[in-house]
Image 1 (cartoon, rainbow, N blue to C red):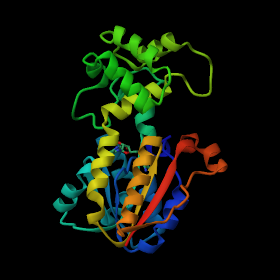
Image 2: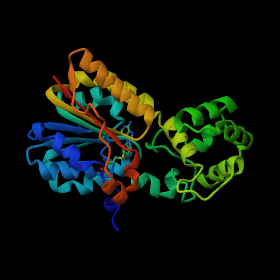
Image 3: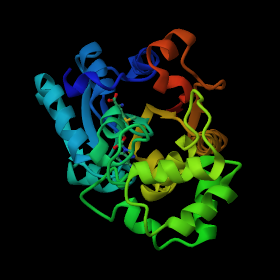
Image 4: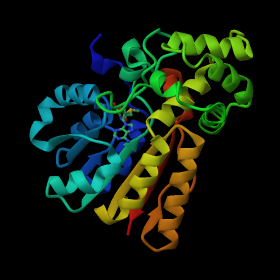
Length: 293
Ligand SMILES: C[S@@+](CC[C@H](N)C(=O)[O-])C[C@H]1O[C@@H](n2cnc3c(N)ncnc32)[C@H](O)[C@@H]1O
């Protein structure tokens, strides 16, 4: 199997249909990942052009190769999407017709043990999406206080046993070096029963959101966004965490109240049963769309 086969784009038909009105325009795919959404969009709309962004250079390289056939219609940028003002100005672009953000992690990140995101495969506890900057999680962990650890697990993991888990992580923090170490500590703290979802899943999600400052990036991005979209342009955001979805929902409401946008998804869009069966990763996806007016 090739790398590109690993990631199935979520809600891709819905994304395509919302883009019909900007089918000749310029779109920023803020989280191109392995290029699944971008490929479908470029194939469907022959007039669309894409600025493809990701902070993960490994993902970006795969997307570049995958989208080679569309080369004259694609530009690739390795950056955090929160820097949208900077990379657009470097490309001499002031406004675009659509942005797509598909938050969370890609299958590439979750299936490569050496990236340190995975509960299933043992590897160094890294978890950086941009592994070329910053320091890995195992190194940061040893500098966190017990209450910081608990806050992370409770807020980003929405884990109600955060107290027990944080105490044990704090106690063992200097020994935790791998994903396997962290998984075992969680099992020891709250017990392990065979369930559909491993008990450490929420803890892994929490540390991933923390180390990559995911909510902070989303906040900064939203604060800059509206000025970069042409009128009748579309903002499409797919999220997988209730805190992210709340930020997006409130931002869209605020834009509508200010007369700057119209919410096209009064009821949030979620994948149907068939999509979830084919792609279990889609189960927590929520998509919201705003039209700029
Ligand atoms: C769910 S995957 C995207 C999958 C993609 N839509 C596809 O169909 O292949 C999310 C991607 O967003 C990237 N990402 C997450 N936060 C980012 C940020 N703040 N800036 C840029 N890229 C980010 C991750 O590195 C990952 O590759």
